[in-house]
Length: 231
Ligand SMILES: C[S@@+](CC[C@H](N)C(=O)[O-])C[C@H]1O[C@@H](n2cnc3c(N)ncnc32)[C@H](O)[C@@H]1O
Image (cartoon, rainbow, N blue to C red; front, side, top):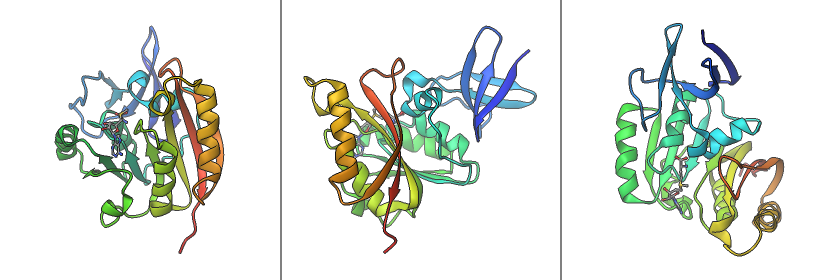
């Protein structure tokens, strides 16, 4: 006998007898995206969500408050082939995810996913150049960023300025080794948070920050509210 607990809107914990697994409700029943298990309970199909393959999944299990609602507009920077984006797409039953990825090869896989899932808008672009996709993206309630670049804080700040709704949320995964392989991750995280709060002319309030181990080593997860001017 299975039990289902809704952790956040559209995000579930399934007790499947021997263990508990994270899942979203599959908006495309019968279709698996990256080989994940499909689990049916009471006529509803869920897709198992592997937190070791998803920074967002890890943030859920590390008890972050997840600001994504079913009708949110989400700008996702660093979509790759869409492993995590597919779960965001499940959550957004009445919303939209703009999925930005700059690798053309990876984008081919993402486009196949978008053929199945109309609430994902694929954008082949460099997240350093928000002006290049400003004609496609409407305002975003949430920016989720997982780009593993040395200037992660700057990318987050410039995209927030362009696209985030006033009082919108930024969810950021910071990979310390993309910034400096020698320095201590804790020192790097402190410096990146400082940069985000004071270097880019945008007021922000970091609501939560936690390392994402054991799911992702040397990664910091962060949720911030960004106070963007409305002009
Ligand atoms: C760690 S992977 C993302 C994994 C993905 N978020 C997931 O959970 O399924 C980082 C991705 O960011 C992309 N990326 C890195 N820098 C970028 C940039 N400046 N603009 C757009 N995409 C970028 C890389 O090509 C790579 O696919």
